[in-house]
Length: 97
Image (cartoon, rainbow, N blue to C red; front, top):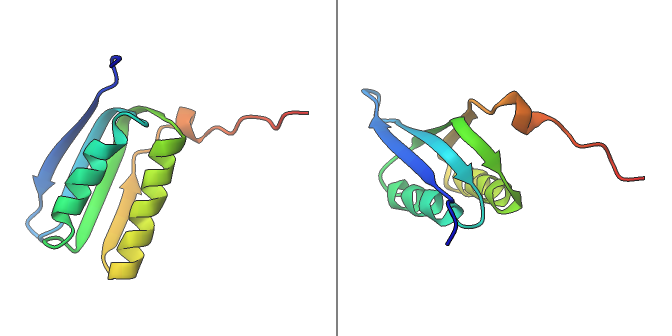
């Protein structure tokens, strides 16, 4: 295994919501970490905030997981907010000619 790493810090807020601060890489090798944390919280928490300010790389699997998590939240009537996406991760690559 390479040097892939994802750190998930957990904070339960006074209002009962949960803030998850992520740092590192959200990719094929690390996505199961976040997925496991979110599945464990599913039955207990109605509002989750994912702070991605510390994430420096998201690959296709990481993006796919974020979309899956958002869809699960919608289906279950829970709230999911994603914050802190770095500008460098927002930049779109030009289409190939």
